[in-house]
Length: 498
Image 1 (cartoon, helix red, strand yellow):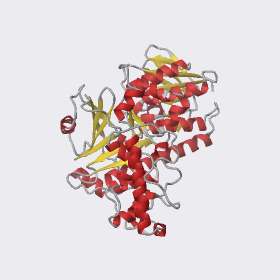
Image 2 (cartoon, helix red, strand yellow; image 1 turned 180 degrees about the horizontal axis):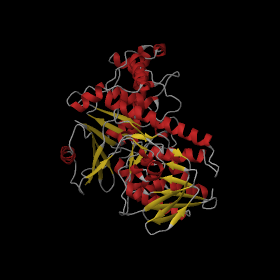
Image 3 (cartoon, one colour; image 1 turned 120 degrees about the vertical axis):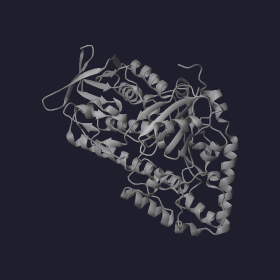
Image 4 (cartoon, one colour; image 1 turned 60 degrees about the horizontal axis):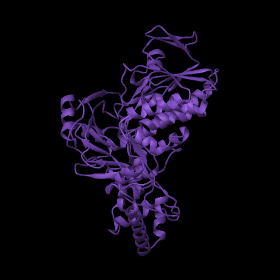
């Protein structure tokens, strides 16, 4: 491999280019990013999940500098408001829930004791949930067996500043950026991509092309006609209105997702502003109504005009086709309900290194790459469908549709197993853990009829004592944590808007 072209910038393009630049060190092969300032990026992927730590470690970023440069804040989970029914609220929090005992997940003990009226709310046993309620944050410390030794967290950040920061790092590692719009894609006789021709007439050839051109998929779809699998029947939202607003309070360490009558609204707190958006289905709501709902529910003054984003939920039939790999929106899209967009970029990058090709492009490796990416997308898809399907909301045609729609068989099996005995099994290292499924299924109103039988090994008095001890440890740990704002002020407060 002598040269790789990454088509498109934004978060996906520059995450890919920075990782390639860091690992290949501009000695193994040349990395070129072709992007046009005339073509905007979606730029609303401002919330992440803890797996982004692996990417940051790969490229060796200084975390405090990263947060400062992106006007970032920290994230301990997602709060879902009004999803089960209007007035309901729950946290899908990162990290552990309680403490497992005798090889059985803590939540089974909690289910038993809750049924007997002897358990506190689940949040009282979950460090990150309780910290969210009280706007507290700290990084994990070496505190032995304390929950403070194992705090899972992620970030909120400005996607535009994130791409700019990564570009600086990538160019420092020898990545070359070329400004220009593609006017022609040239192919070899066997259909493989050969070169890109820009508006200025220049031609840029490469051995391998990474398509980060967004929804249009200039290479993977418009050129190679790879095909697209549409999931709109399961995830009917197809529009988003986005607008930034002024901070009205100290930033809280979580993303908020509030259900509306034909979709949901996000709120992502940054240091210099708040990111807001309304994801909705155009089958059930007009653009004007969706915009009005968004503006009526801002906590601060809007800082720009609302921006409409159109999308279709689904994935390419192949992520890697010939010598072209689609990353980010070019490969597929699922709404940012669980902040998985950048994770899927990261997953593609990680798998690319696992199956890094030579110029022979072994089809067996390409097939396995595609199989693994399809698995990741499908399992995340099911987790998102769960939020819409498992609900008691019947206050609009949208929610009636979601509540009664047929869902994938794998999701039905997971729901029925949980409903029967509270069990959740993680299949083949899928993205979301059993704890994530438990928190969301319970929060969406799915009530197990039973619990793991081995819980009965403990007598109720002993179990009550243990639960109260765990609750006390969590309470003391959260009391030790500084406020989220104080942590930012001390460690990574942005000096200016870059």
